[in-house]
Image (cartoon, rainbow, N blue to C red; front, side, top):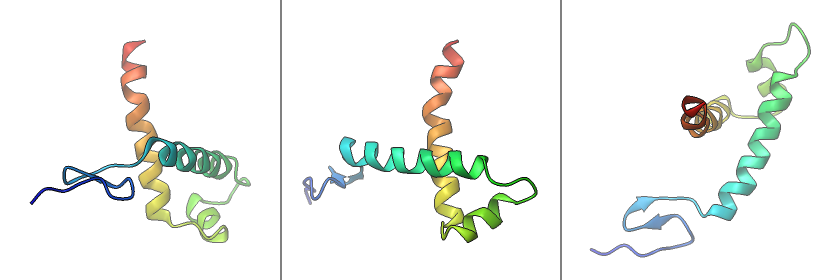
Length: 77
């Protein structure tokens, strides 16, 4: 069975994200991560995420993606 590109998610059976969609989502999640890092002193990340209606699992998934994207650049320095 041949899988074709459908709504920017599947190419040849591999899950992908359209570059524009990724850019928009990345900008959104970078802002959330920055805000969480600047949360009030004494408040845990979990509390901040709950107060802002953000899934802890999704938050850490995006945080990991950014770290993995940055790793090659850090290793080159």
